[in-house]
Length: 154
Image (tube, rainbow, N blue to C red; front, top):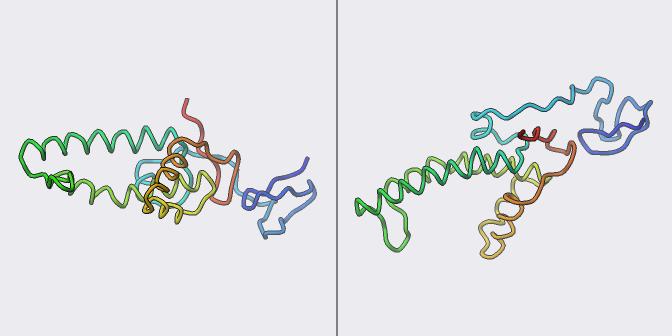
């Protein structure tokens, strides 16, 4: 049976010991995917995460914290009416910037894209493309150049 290289995806003959990309097929690490811990999810740029992890462990909790903080800002009158950002919600956004980028990069990796793809979000109208890519499209099946897919949430 042919062997697919986990690094580049090239199909190698069963007797191959090394892929053309240089990956050692004999001593390769076990193809065991593990769930992403919260520390790795928020502070690491390595690996991949699926849509369920993106929505359930990042996006929904982010909104669950941000929206009440924004409501408190409105109630206290500390919101800038032009920018719709208050003191408390603004501090939260600054604190969540690094984790947001880390999670977005891992979601890009799941789609087999570079983390630099997040810069598309800075371009008006193209940012909708980023939302669709990260939030709604499935990741590449099987291993890609960024690692193994995350196990499905049961």
